[in-house]
Length: 124
Image (cartoon, rainbow, N blue to C red; front, side):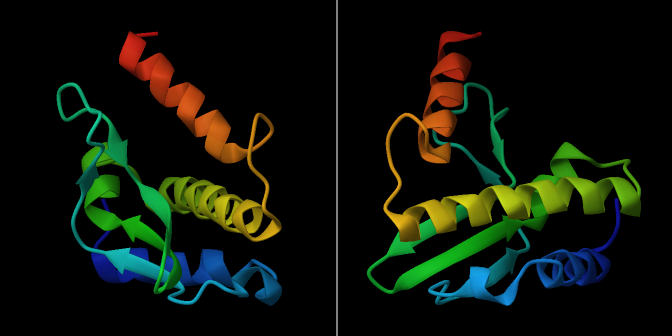
């Protein structure tokens, strides 16, 4: 796995690929946390959160967990990590844009994530 400094460089590159207006109302931007995050729904610490979109009274942000990438992809090279990180960042930006548009319900990414979580909990 690459080091956190190189990971941060890649995160910056991936974010630079996005149109600047996608960052509107993302008050705290994209934050890189050094640690890992495990879902509170994990059965055996096996549901690792790579990134998340948060809405609070203090503003919106996207958090990317370096430690979660290290745990999930310990032997992968830079190109693999960049592609995986690109997917996670775009997933979280989709949450952000759907939040701004007021999109909720069966067509939303939030709903898709809830369905996947229920499948995990049921063991599917």
